[in-house]
Amino acid sequence: MEIYLSLGVLALGTLSLLAVTSLPSIANSLNWREFSFVQSSLGFVALVLSTLHTLTYGWTRAFEESRYKFYLPPTFTLTLLVPCVVILAKALFLLPCISRRLARIRRGWERESTIKFTLPTDHALSPLGFLFLVVQSGITVCK
Ligand code: HEM
Image (cartoon, rainbow, N blue to C red; front, top):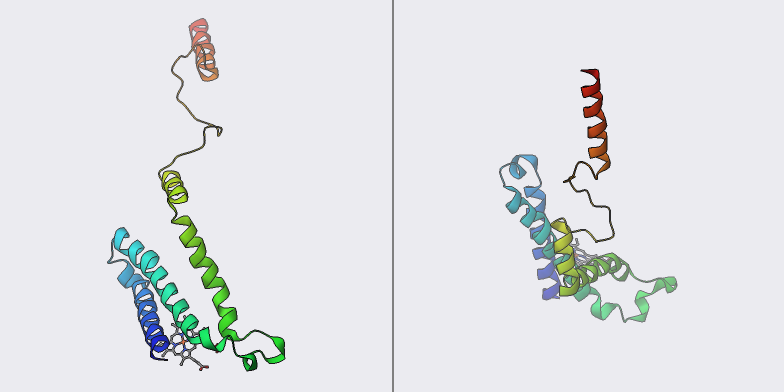
């Protein structure tokens, strides 16, 4: 009983902190690093605390037959679906094989097969260089 209440209070506290820091007057006084830490890391902590609050509340109750009125699942089991999927997905993305790749993509990495834009080095070989030569020779002829 005390555990789920304590987790609920902690979750509400963290969510309040998130709400306050998202106010424009306060958000403008934070730098990008601080803002992204509060909204990203603290947001995830709030989600975990709220999920734990509902999990600890519903753990014993979920196995009571009287909770399933008209054979429908109780609220505390339904509300856990989306947060649990988000937490599992986050855990999956934190695996080294995926997180390393994600970090590379964030730094601008692209797969070899995608189109690459390179600056022409030889005028005579590139289409742009050919166009350049045509225009240049046109100018010489006009002169
Ligand atoms: C001061 C903070 C909080 C306190 C004291 C608190 C307290 C409680 C209590 C006493 C219940 C049981 C209700 C009942 O017996 O029907 C409950 C259920 C629940 N709480 Fe909290 N809570 C808090 C914060 C939160 C937060 C921040 C969330 C999520 C964002 C949350 C989500 C839930 C959910 C989903 C249930 C289950 C509702 C149901 O199945 O009817 N609570 N909470």
